[in-house]
Image 1 (cartoon, rainbow, N blue to C red):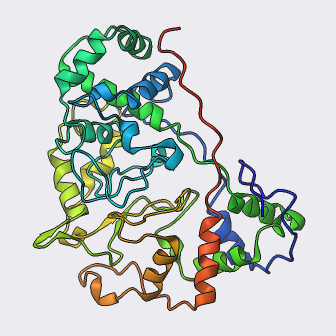
Image 2: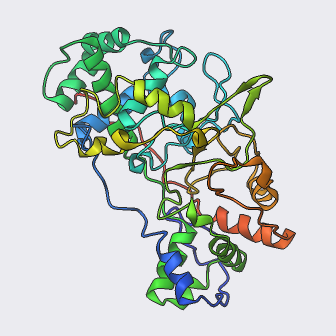
Length: 383
């Protein structure tokens, strides 16, 4: 089967008779599109969507001088050729971390950030690795000094924000993060074979629909019937929330990663959350989710539901616990309900799939990825 960069099935694919789909299943499939979604602008970030801010953000994304030793940039861990991750089971900063580097595909459409949701905006989340002593180990003074003293970055800042890089160090750190967020919000994953099938099914184009592999069609039916969309919902194949799906939360003997429980505590104590002074949304609407979220004991061991788009070759789960898509399907086929929290609503149940069903589900999941178009170097900050 040949795939175009757009995700459409190309001529060498052999047409087959598509499976029969009930009206309810067609409606379920329809809810996973269209793709790409409409562009959205973050009201908490005054330079979101600004072309000049996007250019500044891409330069900063690739700038190792943001780190304390000048050796690590955002792009060190978020590699374009690796689906904006690093392909490692655990992220590597100044030492190995406890969690996997998440992909940045479609991150501009999220509303919680990080595996534990400690960030409530993309720009706030962009500050975290810059300051984290285990990662870039930088500080506001270093970032602000770079924006003030580097002529190209200072020029790029002025074009993006309409003023020279002045004010306090913390303000400039936030502004750098808002430019970083403006760039990251442009990372929209490509259309996939699934998108081509969905659109063909809805338009009644049986010839185009028949190009979608039968194994993937059978896997899609399993995905719908197993109610996987309860968590992997909508066009992004994620509800953007959190759950305990039975992955061990011990990081080392005697130590655990509490996930969302700790993330909510960090969020509440953050200078940069949307309830603070750096939110550019004068309406206050963007802060309502943060204002009303509750930290509950049942949040222990919960982690963000990832998108299934552009999942890559693994590893998977928040801590890289599962190496392949086959391992992921096996986990959900055999998950132990006793491992899940008894005081929370169970999100998963063992699917008890046969070997053939498991292979079909993997075949479907692989159609949610496609080769992205080549990337080019960003334009200069000040032509």
